[in-house]
Image: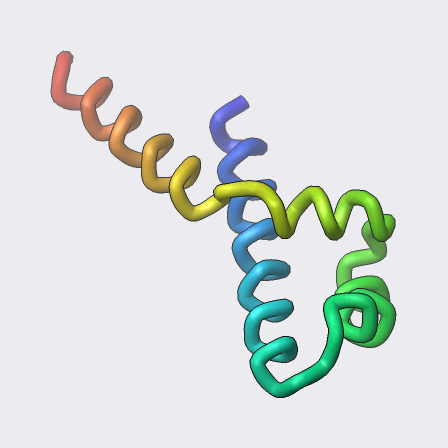
Length: 74
């Protein structure tokens, strides 16, 4: 399960970075979704906005720390 969650978190981070990159240029999130995200990832608008609100970098960092701790126990 951690493997699948890690992939989803990485995908969320990629989408967040694309959105930040383009909104800093002055376009709206709606434009980014319609012209960049949807053609590339084929996700719904509600999923897109859910991804933008997810603290994916923190969750991925926590997941990596937990995995390292587990490896050190044995």
